[in-house]
Length: 465
Ligand code: TYD
Ligand code: MG
Image: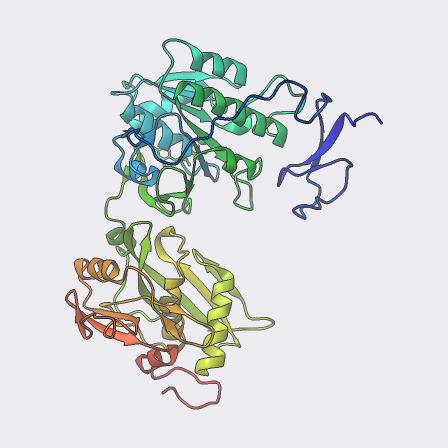
């Protein structure tokens, strides 16, 4: 039987189907299938003689990969201490968040020690020059080229005067001329990325690839891109805020979950070495519905304010709106408050916001969220000089979290005097009572937080504890 010459590729997940259908069976997306041609060369291991594999052990004498520091401390930290020769990095983020600005600034810093090339497929060379002028970096000797043909770009990488660091902005505009499909389709994005990475690895070039994000928040042109590269960075933030956060979600050469914080101003991005002070800058005294969470982002403690607003539902189903935290987690926490602590929340809308545009993913934020919700519901402020952290379990128990010392030290450094933390420190050798200059209140169950909020409405009609 003749092999089919076309297949239908899902533009959302990259799955390939022999027939067109309205819905991708692999990921459930509607109407994502696009017809693409396949090469009909016979598949399989082939007929040639197999070469013997060389099998080696795990030990190595080679020194750890040398890293090139970019001079942008926050960027280097997220990459695990600098750029590793021959590595491929994918930088994803919403349009207009500042990916091009960030990478242009990084290259401008780096270029004094390392030859750099910025390839733009989206903007004209003149536009980039205007931006460089605004950023005050037009004197930096960064090579600039406008190109979309992958073959041409690989040609430039193979030249004797080839750069050591290359930015491709963006992978969705790149075009491989051996494929029929349009730029931006899965087949194009995947092949272009593969070819560029192969060329870069061969020469030891560092390649920084910009990838757009779909409205669901994934790097467009499927997850396959994330498998191909060594490091995946997301550049995120609210466009209406000036803060931007660079987050490593995958890193073959360093820790993940590391974040770098930047501030977008009229002269581009500047680093924020002390994010806690910045996230807490706009705090107001003694307002109900706010709690300061002492979190850990990567290796660094970060203090953020968590704000909750609980208001009676006017009609219909109560609303739950969350910015910067997980909606499912909030639902769980509200259920625990209601079922285990008897707090009546069912008839209320709940709005939750992590101030400053940070996205918190740690379960350790549970207790701070619960405190903010209880505070808003009761009208009683969480003590202004207190930080809160701890994971809440389904039975209402408060569980210990990691890196307690780091969190407490950061809180003390920023002038906090009290901490509400999970119980068990004293037993495990912590001082209890006072630690790192903070008065520590240890909490075993969520119910033990309730005395802080005496006016909490109870489901059984009784006033709070
Ligand atoms: P850009 O880097 O073009 O975003 P991306 O490449 O992720 O699409 O960033 C553009 C935004 O940044 C735009 O909304 C304007 C803003 N911006 C500043 O606020 N200050 C600046 O100095 C620059 C260059 C951009
Ligand atoms: Mg851009």
